[in-house]
Length: 622
Image 1 (tube, rainbow, N blue to C red):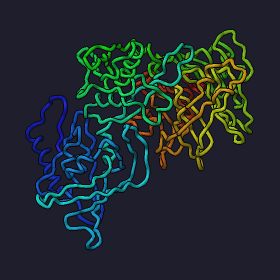
Image 2 (cartoon, rainbow, N blue to C red):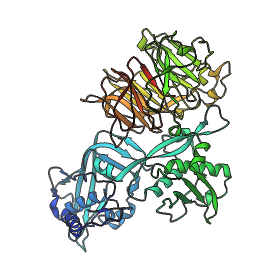
Image 3 (cartoon, helix red, strand yellow):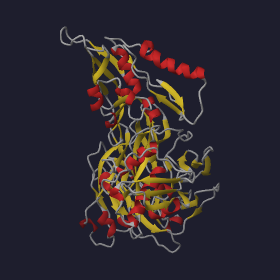
Image 4 (cartoon, rainbow, N blue to C red):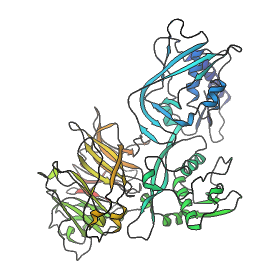
């Protein structure tokens, strides 16, 4: 395999020769592999910096079956856009049929290879069968959606020898591509594409709510064009039932479009086919908004997008500032305040930005300290607060206003103890309030429409254990659940929220339960490596911050993706005895925790700082 560096910098001749020779020696046997017997490993390529590109080496004349196997698997980890070099290791028929984009299988290490010895007389001298084996970590499907996976991986690969040329080639390759974890991290990057929730934001006449749909693309193979194509193809199967796309069915990039990139003015022109040519201006603006939100993953400085029809005519254009007014986008919302309970049981707030450590009680009943609360939540517009009493029995909702007496509770629990009653509450962008009743005799997840309607029971799937904590995403389309399992294990699941739109739409109904109740559907693990999750908070459009412990490890704070993939980059600085964590979707806002030192926060590039040694229950709006 040959390695090159992007950006116009040329390697010294000596280094170029070194890489080229290494690639040739590889196929000549420097990474030897037995023709039979024990497993051999294809070592994963060491992590490279982002400017390094890796190119595959074609098969050498007269290469042995083991060298063909080794070279093929190495070629799968290269930056070859269409795997043209990998196909040279296949027979002509196999090369035409093989679909590398169909799936990617990620193994803990590079795939082990074992030559199978067939019974005498069963396989001719012109054929060889090898087995690939390893520990499965994840899969990426044809929609580029990531899913954690466990268990052994095993696949057979068959080679034949051409009777005329004498060259060995693979006639039965593995399905898709297969590689080790470090090669996957070098070759692929996680990005969010954006669609609109099947509901609108509270208090508006129809503002769409943007929902992130994470996918993995090949990071060095025309990534912007890849990402646009993925967006146009529609949402992933898991998210699809709760979102919509403004692009008409069949919309695609104009034929032969490649190498999309912003111009010198940070403007990107996107040529589309005829399916998008007859849309109205409002829908075109929504399409451009989806593109702009999505492409910020790869081009944070992108300022505008220009959509063009098949004849080059402009359909519409959109600037960054206009996009944020077209659709509500959680990570673009910066909270005004951080909230917590002070030592006198008063809901207290201080500016979310800045270095201030002096909080002031909020206006209204919760700021008076007459009602002791165990947990709190503040609505996204920061006008209303919800609180669960210290004994966990009652859920109260009150305006953050000076003249606002405390009304009777909107929900009560009959659980036998404080830790088996109501969970901490949380608000979504629709203005709905979510809370779980942990009563073991009748566990239930509830949504309170607009915080004032009649609580509606949420339909739940079969879970591995009772719910211990719940945080609904700002978009109202997904919910994070901490679920108890055997022993002291607690896992983090992400579920899809379906239905319930009519419940939120008619909060004045005397019988809100007559509407279709919302349901949590198809929960999947978001932190598969953690066996005990003790605290969590949404920390972005598709990211959460969690406190927990891996098997055999110690408690730590780390970020996780909703699809269960590992996030690159440093974890938050260590902090002992964290009991609660709070984060805003806007990553410019400091992370906040409740630890043995009280309320502490972590500004960007700094260490943990004390805010209030007697404070508890920190929250940002949501």
